[in-house]
Image (tube, rainbow, N blue to C red; front, side, top):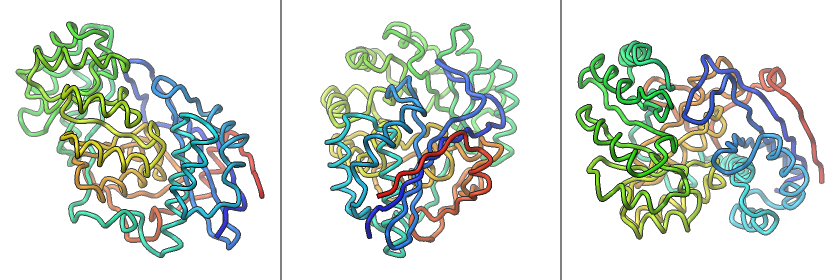
Length: 370
């Protein structure tokens, strides 16, 4: 079983409504879909949804890196040799986590299909509970968010994730309005996406949020301000989560050493896929930190990969892979029964890819053969 042909497809996936975070507004989500074909006719799918604000990668850059460097380096290799694949990718290019994630996911899909088993079975099996997602809420007017929170409750969500870090001074009012609308019916977690800039500002914001019973505060500081988390830990009791600050093992080791956060948000797109994130989840477990698997708003392909990882690792306690419920259409068919996701027992990622929808969303495509 050797990788013989690869298709790199850049698509643009329409969102049901604009997605607003502290540093950007998205009307649609660009994605790179990777199709790996082997010499025995098997097909595996991977996906890359890069975010230049986090890893410096762009969709066009990912497609180019795959075409010119990463795919030529692994053509002819057995996709089931995932450790060797990663070693070759790392020898070829440093970093490039989102691009490598597409390769990693496609290889796991192929490995599962070759074995006739779901990916989670190859990772050691799954817990019996279905994974869940929170309702992820954009930075909007407080009244609008209150209405959305009530609707989310009626849809079956049990947790809300509120994006904060806006520059209009309304973050506290947003949370106050949502908590008043839902009482104690739903849990609330907040994510500033680096938007509170310095430890003093973050400390004041977190203290102001405490009356509204926040589960945790995610990435209140700039990604590089690792020391700021230590200062913030000294002044707050609310649970803290690092996201943009944790990409690789060295980043995580610093947080373990500092004891400055309670949780880390791992994302396949930041760190290179299922394989490195599984290692990071174990590293976090040994260091006493719980793990969430987060999202860059991927389609069903990468979202399924994240869920397979999450259900197979005992230290992963939260999942926020909500991309598929935010799109008007997308090429995969991962099924949600809110707030749960319905992972199947099908081989590999356990999803089908609709080639007609993929073609409809395609911006550009490239093929590489051995």
